[in-house]
Amino acid sequence: MKEKISSTCNDQTHKTVQGRAMIELGPVEDGSSHIEELMELTAQCLSRLEIKEHFNVIKEIGRGKYGRVLLVTHRCRGTPMALKVLPKASTQLKGFLREYCISLRLSSHPCIVGLFGIAFQSNEHYGFAQELVVGRDLFAIIKPRVGISESVVKRCAVQIASALEFIHRLGLVHRDIKPENILLLDTQCRHVKLADFGLTQKRGTLICYISSTLPYMAPELCAMVAEDGQEKPQAPPLSIQPSLDTWAFGVLLFCILTGFFPWEHCTSTDSFYEEFAEWRQDTETTEIPTQWKRFTPACLEMFGKLLALEPNDRSTADVVKGYVGKEWVKPKRPNESEGVNAMATLSSPCRSSPVLQ
Image (cartoon, one colour):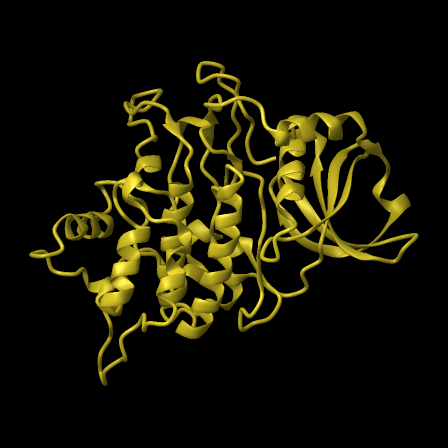
């Protein structure tokens, strides 16, 4: 599992995860939900089986520090599946059940990876069976310093927005929107699927602090990092809201349109973020930052809604649907670098960025 959930902010239960910030979570603002009820029912009837007795393992198709994804076929039915297995040694049962039940609840949406309703435990692992998506992920088709063509980005954006709208309507927040978690059924993004709900939480869950930041994290989340010499941040616990996903979605769109991150983290120590924040606070008199000049006025208006500095001012992700009929990127003029030299001083392009590896 990606993280452990604490019952209160004072009950410190957490785990550091490679490539992800450690986050301590507190209670949810409202009461129990269908997800918790489904978790209890699943725990009571969780099947015990050994993987090789029930599945033919073809190959490993994904690996993380705390789990693997296997391409398998069911021994009786021959059905191909993606089997996600998490070692018991590093996974809490509660965390496994939460990821499985949330994934199951969301799997009916056409732009979210489906589940087979098979969850089990073996002597050494917890596991569940997912729909097999044969194509690559969005990260794999991003060209460094170039990105992806605007028409493909728009197709992808509309589908991701639809998935996020569905997730948020059910009172959940994905919390890990990034290119690696968007699976492609074809290279032109005619059909994409959002995946990996290991960090998904109920709206209103409290974040007490995080240990480090990632480029997709919103400013209010980056403020939850404790300063040097402090055990906890000065900011009060942060309530998880859909606006966190909206911000990450905006950063993702910038990344796949350009092949760059707009910044490394949303703090005062990042000059690219500071330049963006100053511009957004006074768009009338402040010059547009270099890396944003490639976009049309309509596209900048869209980004302004997705990346509003104040969480309450952010639009929902589906605002992009109103902009797909407009141009997003200006035509490139001869001998125009579009700010690539300035952007090169930022982190590496998306494909080779240490943060994304």
